[in-house]
Amino acid sequence: MKKILLSALLLASFITAFAQQNAPVEMADEMRSSGKIYVVIATITIIFVGLAIYLFSIDRRLKKIEKDK
Amino acid sequence: MKIIYQTWWKVLAVLVILYTLIAGFLFDVPRLFILHETIRNVYFHVPMWIAMFTVFTISVIYSIMYLNTGKEKYDLVAVECVNTGTFFYVLGLCTGMMWAKFTWGAFWSSDPKQNSAAIAFLLYCAYAVLRNSIDEEQKRAKISAIYNIFAFPIMVVLIMILPRMTDSLHPGNGGNPAFGKLDMDNHMRVVLYPAFIAWATIAVWIASLRYRIRLIEYKRNEIN
Image (tube, rainbow over the protein chains, first blue to last red):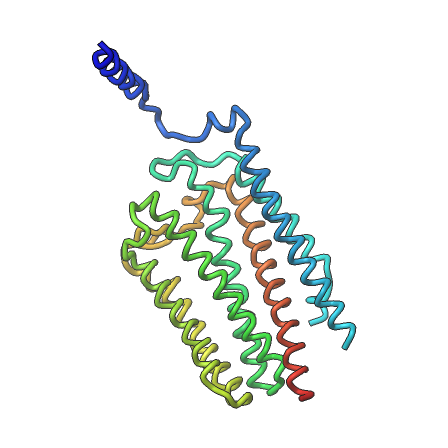
């Protein structure tokens, strides 16, 4: 009984495979409408701001060393 | 040369890149088969090459200035510009390979553009080898300056001209100009061109930092 149930369940899982539609050109519309793209933007912005601050701090340290000379 | 010690243009470049990061993901792009959302890579992959070209051009100018005047400082600028350019070269190659995997089907498909970019990369690796193999300072500076002046046009021919004369998967080859009137969507230009300028400026900034460090090292060696 268990085996039959399990195989039926596994077969049912295939139904989702047919749910795909032939959209003209796939774009990340869904992601943008649900607002999740902002998460990606926030992430790369944080990374870039971090790198920029890092560069500025190197710049400042160099200035200090140059002044000592 | 005083400008490399100023801050305003560095802040400006950072702000413009932040704009391209946000606008690059939010603004509309043309809907194209195969490319899909990866068309946004244009905003990040191409500026790496523009940054590379900018610092390599500066290094050639300083190599010529070194040969004219014999000032050691100019040689130091040229070296550090090449070093920074090579770094952006690697970034450009890696982002290109990543993009190629998902649009052309393989990281490396021996496309004319990819092959000649790899050859030109070796050209600049040879520059580093050449420099490190000469101990005498003036000789090193002179020979590497001459090599640099010759390497630059060969690199331009390899990357920009030769792939254009054959069929290539890369846009801008096989007779189609990648940034021509008909090939690039005008909405993309508002992000792409600021990205070019800003990333080129960032490359110049990094090169200037490396130059300043090298200058301190150079002065220290002089005293000893």
